[in-house]
Length: 233
Image (cartoon, rainbow, N blue to C red; front, side):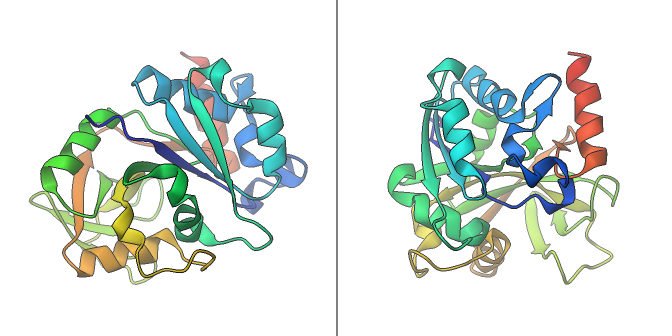
């Protein structure tokens, strides 16, 4: 079954959301009247995904105080702290591996993704690679397109070396086998994009196209847009 644990990357400084995030972490920003993490956790629980590991750093203790073991939101919540040095998105996952086990979902702490997680999980199992990236045909609309995707395959992915053929974007949901992180140190600083790029070069990154757009609270405009969506129910 594809009810693997879910890692939520929620350790960043969220500088784009200042002054909101000067005193609280991004996960506790209120969207439609409640902390955004509550919406994320309830979405996961509704899809039968109840084991969640929160990768936290900046002001993470405030999230622990607010959400505890997650039982009030229908999940079993554990916390993996970056420690004194921010490890980057890939490093945070590497550090959390003992809690995540052999196979796990990953999403960002500022993403609202209207997608069937278990379908993506089944696609990951069917394709049999070390990782899978969900992609959306973005055409530069909601953020910078960074993926070349054709015939169900990711052909190129980069956040920096952009090409005219990049019509898709990394949607923000992925799955990994733990072995995708082998070769990296326990406290090594790594960006998840670099791990994805390495898997792609090794033929170990599958692709899955999502047809409904993503939402995010990583910017003030994104926050306002999601607030309007959730307020409509």
